[in-house]
Amino acid sequence: MSTEKKLSERLYMKKKNIYDVADKETLQKIYAFSEDYKKYLDASKTEREASSEAIRLAEAQGFTEYKLGEDLRPGDKKYYNNRGKSVYVFKIGSKPLDQTGIKILAAHIDSPRIDLKQVPLYEDSGMAFFKTHYYGGIKKYQWTAIPLSLHGVVVKNDGTVVTIRIGDEPGDPVFYINDLLPHLGHDQATKPLGSAIAGETLNILVGGMPLKEGDGDGSVKLNVLNILNEKYGITEEDFISAELSCVPAFDARDIGFDRALIGAYGHDDRVCAYPLLRAIFDTDADETVLGVLADKEETGSDGNTGMQCMLLLDIITEISASLGKSSTAVRAVSKCLSADVDAAYDPNFPEVYEKRNTAMISCGATMSKYTGARGKSGTSDASAEFVGYVRRIFAEHNVPWQTGELGKVDIGGGGTVAKYIANLNIDTVDLGVPVISMHAPFEVVSKADVYSTYEAFKVFIEN
Ligand code: MN
Ligand code: MN
Image (tube, rainbow, N blue to C red; front, top):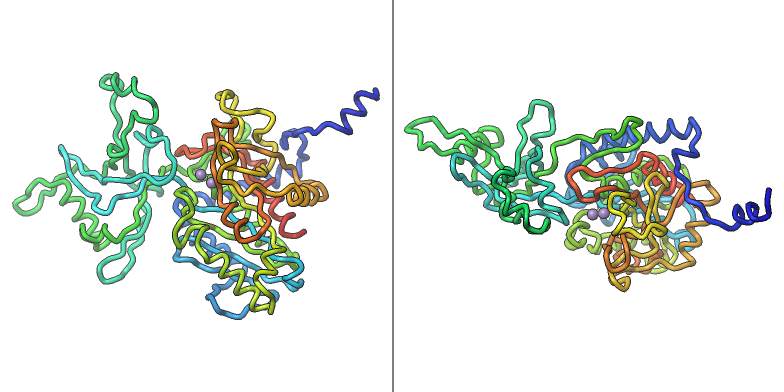
């Protein structure tokens, strides 16, 4: 070997495509894991469904429900159900907590979508519609003219909760947002992409059949209400105390002749939530580990189901108190991976990425030392020491991983829940799956990156 070759092998950092280097056994593991992940996705189209599915999986693994104030002991496997929209899954280890801390993994389970307004139903020109208010950062034009399903809960005046999930089973009707035909869309087509579809035109088409009973006032709206009343026992006023959302009515599908990729709604961030759960379920290590599935990340993490809620602090305080340790001491030595997706480099839009510092598809779980925008505004920026620690344990356990950044300086930017956890005096860095077409109704990830993220989480909580 030439001196130059020897030197370059020793000194250069090289990104590797996992599919390029994986042996047959690893490939089988990657593909098998993605089958389980797709099932979780299809059952979890909203934060409520992602929560109940997480709880179902946790109970199957022997986890039981935790109530705040309850005593905890080493060996306990618990979950805390936060209002059906956010879940904390944890295992108590026997190592001294004020020395080893808690290993925390935090992902979010809400995704961009179309929420119904409180007075949604109206009729116009022979069609019934729901008025909506979109949730999270969407490109509005992507949500027109695709099949949508309706998910959520309606709380009736007597307090009973009706769960609605319609449009995802074969044979279900679906819902729809109208768009202009190109023949009449000349003016629309000259508008900038961001303003071509106005927020108030994202109305959901939900009916077209007038009521025919009695004297028949010909109302399509009344007919829709009548159907809803017969099926769910609800009236128009019940929409006021409802949380109903329209999401894409497609299931997760393999993409490509080689099935290397997965297309689905809501990879961001259930593609980190599922590996997080599996890593906690699958570990035998005697560590205290805590997995957070948070709501409201897409709207700023506010509220009592978002990551800015005091509940994380409360649960750490309760765990510490149960084991006779000071919560402040425990937090000071705890460590966290903020498990969120990153933008994968897309060769179709090279102008927005800085290639050397962007995640490449199938090159593994992606670490972002910092997020934020412009001059790193709004980031907790992990320390070199903490990144060094994570890097070392990944190297020791052969985890394929890479670094990433959300687009070019001053072009890209964004935030995650990392800073809210770091603000509690906990070392935190972002690590998750790179995504193509993030926030689109159908996003793309690599199966290799999903599995690599699972491996990364498992190594992190075990070391
Ligand atoms: Mn996210
Ligand atoms: Mn997002």
